[in-house]
Image (cartoon, rainbow, N blue to C red):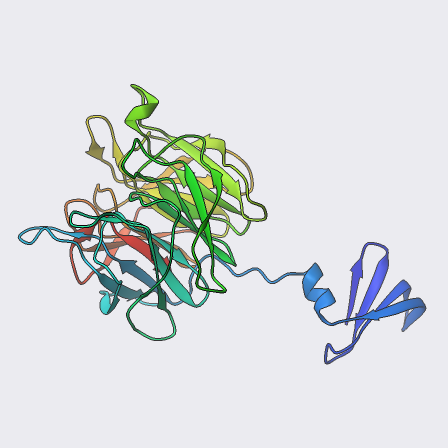
Length: 353
């Protein structure tokens, strides 16, 4: 097999065991190689053509943690799982280490993560929980984010999970935290949002993390924000403001991501805080404002967002609902109710594989 990089040709034998660089490659009825220079390891090709793990899942969506409504009004530790291949109800497949609400989620190719959160007994949390996709099971505590907070957003690159924004004991946080998928470790502070914001929705392209909505009373009278912010995965850096949602929303909607666009579904406008059913969409390829492309089946906030390769999902949400909504990525359209969680709950985290 031959690859052309710049003005040189790279020849790989069938087993990929040897790599040869040629300064010149001619092809008529046969290939003529001239001016060969040196051999390299087989990883030379993958260094030039890195494999990028897609953000979307192909098998299952997960919903973890959250707050349970009447009559108990308690926090949940449940990890629910539902199928992407067929519409149906979720099943309870495990527990996070501590029941909590206002958590956020991240997804590697092999594990789901739940970070941050809040419960009345223990206050704001910094826990990073991890649970396997290959088998149903409980989560384990594998590290800490740098700042205890809830109402934060989650993003995922091929190699790291990110937790951004949220609220702790002050007026909110602008911290962007990053933790590795390859090993169990604490997060590091790698940048800042343009302002302190909570609760916020998170989205991920293959190259950038996005945060949309949120706000803080510390920002003044117009503290509910419609901003869409973006930060790079390739280097540690601050976020920049790259567009606006169609509505300013404080109580967060759910975040979903196709391979081309980010989606912000639901949330609340305000004050006064009124839940909405709007599904907003903004492109990853250019910095632009979002457009309204459909509606959820119910107006609600603090739902979990999941993303398959074909559809976005919004599960749970305010009013303590158990609804799993699904809307298409291929065309702009409304969501349909395709199943139920095992518990009606809000302020939940979402993951996918």
